[in-house]
Image (cartoon, rainbow, N blue to C red; front, top):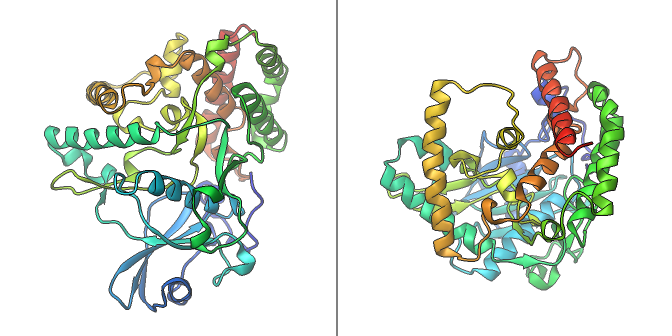
Length: 409
């Protein structure tokens, strides 16, 4: 994880606060005016925080021209890499698909605190119209829902057509905050946000290193010490992966494609009357990653993801039984998933969906093993330990044991 921002955070009152990247961050009317004045020559007349999101503080700033703008502050756990990564991703897509994707226009940014007019990293962008899809989805008629899924499938088909030769997050290779300098020639693939590692030329190097990073974090996390018992087995698995005895050559040759990193309804804006998609947001964790990864990190709202529960069932395991209400919801999601995946193939015949990616389920097991070594949401030093953390730690340890057993380690 990147070093934290040089600010003094407020005292955390809850476990959620302690883990929050936005603890201690704020945007005042004066701050917003400084940002708008620097990039647009405008004064700000009002600011309203958006009470959504976890990793960034997002504020609506209304300027004297009566237009609304978005100011996003990067969370306190990162320095430069996440701000520049989001800028780079949006620039790449806007240049590749000038009018085909509903993306915000970036109006200014600063990824170096020492040069920032407000002392924080920030991105200034236009505010797109529409409502978050997660707030309106349940109220939409089925025909409108299908219309929305058609558009999402078209968007996915476009961005997944962008293939790369390395694994890593997008980054800028210029030290300037001059937007005229930010174009495709100034964008590279660098280290992965939150990992301090990368870029990588192959899947095995990427996976082994990210596991090693998680293991180092585990060693410093008192609460997750029970996981240390499994390190010898994990290391044997990593060595076998390096030796080529776990995945076949076809299973290793997974394509590296544009990765959004959080492709969920909360990051999609729609017109709640027509169902037209008006915005795709939050590219902070985007980059060039294995084609599997967005199917792990996103699409859960309509059941198109390969979730940890899906992996458990594939191994003949289960943590909690579903209620009848959850079963009904699952059936609805299954129907949406089938429709969505079929539409993806209409828009991009060569798009590889989970069932078409060789070795996808094996890599899903490996992905969730890695993410359970020291779950990010159990790392804060909280006393007393929240009661639900004990259950979550037990599930993480069990899952790692299940995967290691499944791979015969």
